[in-house]
Amino acid sequence: MSKDSSVKNFVLRIDASMWEAIEKWAADEFRSTNGQIQWIIADALRRSGRLKSGGKKTPAKAAEGCGGPTGGDGKDEDIF
Image (cartoon, rainbow, N blue to C red):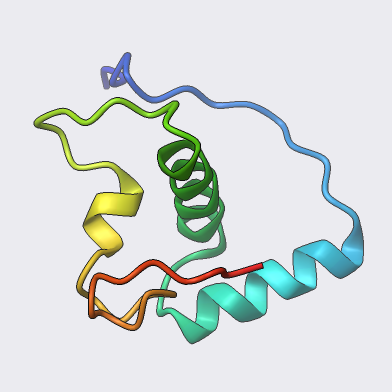
């Protein structure tokens, strides 16, 4: 079994109330909790201009048009 070198694993400590909020948000968006955390990070990086656009779909790009926090209309809204 070979591992994809572009995916990194790490431990993340999140307080219980934040974890519950992320779990609920993930369920609302039909994502796993892990997928939601990846989406949140990718969206923050994209909004700040720190995530370069490339051919590979990032979690933020994959979520576009699927009824995520933008409502699927492509317009960014404040989600926090």
